[in-house]
Length: 231
Image 1 (cartoon, rainbow, N blue to C red):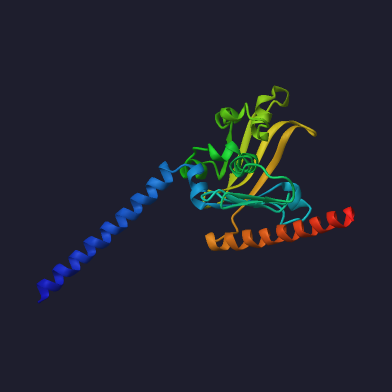
Image 2 (image 1 turned 90 degrees about the horizontal axis):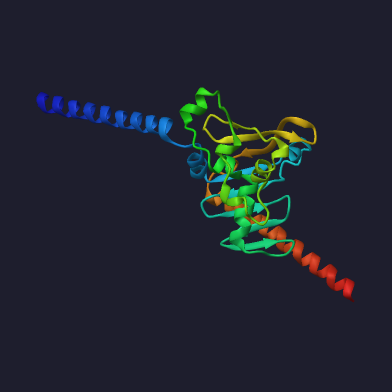
């Protein structure tokens, strides 16, 4: 009887050690081989704001993305995409093009092409500085209207020299700064702030649907005003 229990205990200990080793290996693989761009995509839901919105305490202004379903809602400009359908206060474009424009404008190639690992981020004290040349998406150079990141890089007069990306302890970006010659001279300009308020898909969809209802009401009021003007 004692031998049976002894064998059972040894088997349990061996299984426990194996599980611990697997977890340790997974953590090491994540820490040394995962890429920052992949971590952001896996997080899936991100809220992007301009620094002026936060400074002026417009905390609800910004654009929220579901990076997996390619959906968003933009509370600054009255614009959203859900299930491949675009909704807005203004004219409509192809939803696919609209999503890509919003994505590269707000998230930017700087984050979508970022290949640094969690280990590199931690060693840099959660602040990575890189050359924009290593991050730009050259396929966007010939776009009808290139995103700001590519525009700044292509125009040599700006002297766009560095990108600084700040991260939280989960290795997710929280802020992006560009170093270039702007309105206030050659200095660091904070371009976007990133946060992660949505817990899951249901949470994101709740806010998206609420904003679509807001757009619908706005359009009804707008159409009513137009009809009143005609009469």
